[in-house]
Image (cartoon, rainbow, N blue to C red; front, side, top):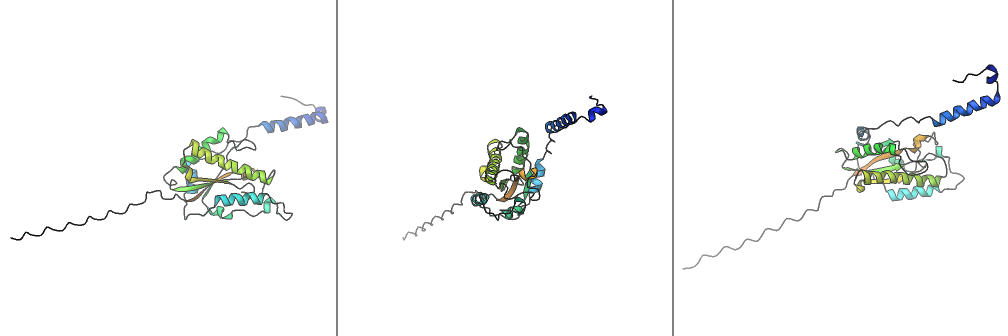
Length: 230
C-alpha cells in the first residue's frame, strides 16, 4: 500500500494523479448486475385483460416520426413534452431493462435470458390468448430523430428474438419505438430508466377457427309406392 508523507499530501501534481487514478478505478468497476426477472413477474404484470385496445401501430409510428422532426421554437423541453400516446399508459404493462450495445439495436448476451423469461410468460396458458406490443424508449440525449429510429430498431430486435429464437407466433407481436417522445421518467430525461423496453398486452388473438359449413339439406323422402290394384 502506498504511504504518503505530509509533504506528499501537499503536492498538487501528486494529488492530481491520485484523483485521476480514483476516477479510472470508478470507471472500470463492474456495473451492478441486473435483477433477474422470472416468468411469474411478467405474468403478474400483464395478466389483467379487460377489453381490446385499438392501437394503430403504423399510424403511431408515423406520428412519432413527424413529431421528432419538429423545429418549432415553441417546442417544450423533453421534461414538459406531453406523451405522444397517452392511451398506452392504460394497458397492462411490464417494464424491463434490456442491455443493448451502445447506439445499436444489438441485444447483449447477458439479456438473452431476460428475453427468454418474457417468452416463457407469453406462451403460458394465462397469456397465450393475447397479442402484445413491444415499445422501445430512449433517454433524451442526441438528436430526436435518431432516437426515434434507434428505439424502433431496438423494439424490432426484441420482437425478432421472440419470434425467431423463442418461436412466439409473429401475429401476436407488434413493435413501435417512441424515442424520447414519451419518456418513462419525464422529471429525469437523461436517466437510464428511460431506456427501458415495455411489453404491453393489447387484445385477444382473433379467432382462427375455420368457418362452419352449412348443414347438409335432408334428402327428400321418396314417395311411398302405391298399393297395386287387384
